[in-house]
Image 1 (cartoon, rainbow, N blue to C red):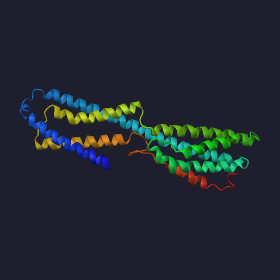
Image 2 (spheres, helix red, strand yellow):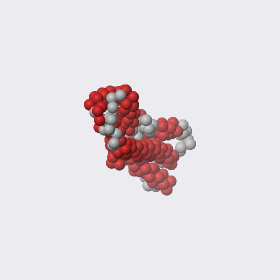
Image 3 (cartoon, rainbow, N blue to C red):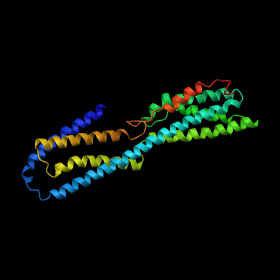
Image 4 (cartoon, rainbow, N blue to C red):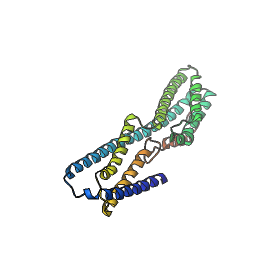
Length: 259
């Protein structure tokens, strides 16, 4: 929050000072308006490019956030489905697998989710997932009920692993297209402020206020865009609600109903 305030204030101060200094140095040129049409056209082009880049960037960010939320819900659902498969498993593997299935969403919500903001995985969560693989693979292949539960659990575990890998990839930030759109957005925002100065913006009070306000808005937009480079930070960040919900769901399943 404070970073955004500092950036906005700094952009306003720099723009106002530049406008006053530059306007005074070019004041004698302002009487010649023969190139007004071409200057207006170029300004409109820069504004249009900024709007297009911003629109594409917001679509990319929105889709990434939605995909991250959907993947988290699917991952949590796969954990719940794997838990129900333990009903026919023999002891002591059954209790071990159940304990790990209960521990995994807790670790994701309490430990790993905070690390996603910096694009990192949690080692304890990784260990829990590896232990699940080992425990399920150690199940016997007979009788048929146990074999079926083993195969179904392995399918759910592969799904959990793939979805977690996608989640960690998304935590790494934008792909090349997203980075290009972010660069275009920032470049367009800078162009909308710099272009009027380059063509000889006057130092009259209303012009200084107008350009300073434009700089403040552009700086704020850029700060927001940079803050939404991945779906686990910023205004559109995804919360670990799916994992906290499945943890509560598993805790509420009576042992006799899951046997």
